Image 1: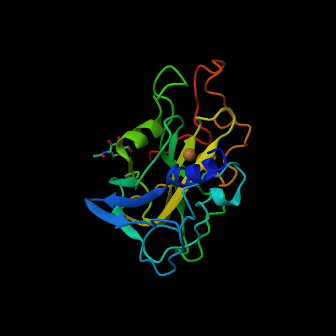
Image 2: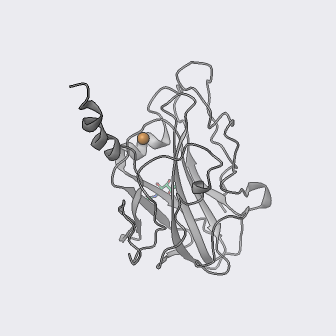
Image 3: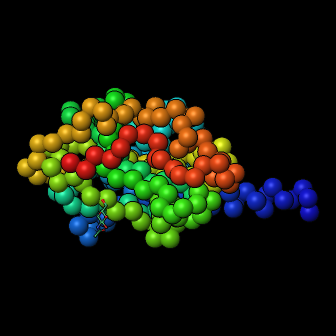
Length: 235
Ligand SMILES: *[C@@H]1O[C@H](CO)[C@@H](O)[C@H](O)[C@H]1NC(C)=O
Ligand SMILES: [Cu+2]
């Protein structure tokens, strides 16, 4: 019995965690990558990620787009409308949801997301009084398997990456990051861009020691929670 235990556990571990698997814009579904083997010719807007497993350190190069570097398609979205990310599955109920964008001024194929140009358009951390509760953004993803965010109405039109990040904090002082990126083309008549003080690099938007990242939600020491990284820019 004892020796067969790891074999029994292995499928359950594969089935845990999660990743964004599609997007909805204006009622239209854009399939993403479904994992786990590479599909070089998949006609999708999402940059391909390797598996459902977490990234464990804020400085990991995979933090940018979970290892994804390109996608053949993009989706058009009018500034001021919502994009909904969909997860086929998601396991954890403690930690924030953070949604970021990055301008790809010279198009997508040369856009690696490595400059200090990421800005947040949406986030939800703790919305109740207790860190050890299910009053977290990721608990809403657990419940709905969806997250909707508004593209700022005044945002300058152009090509952008959108990055959905779930930061799971259920293990004390052992943060788990789950980020995926998609390519979108924003239309509209706006001209605004996020101000310099709200821009960040990814990896590197916050140190691993940030109290929003390295936290024990069970020890009662923290009584409030601030999402790591810059504040949200709403346009
Ligand atoms: C659109 O996104 C915003 C968050 O940016 C959210 O508050 C709102 O409920 C969303 N609307 C719909 C219809 O999903
Ligand atoms: Cu997990």
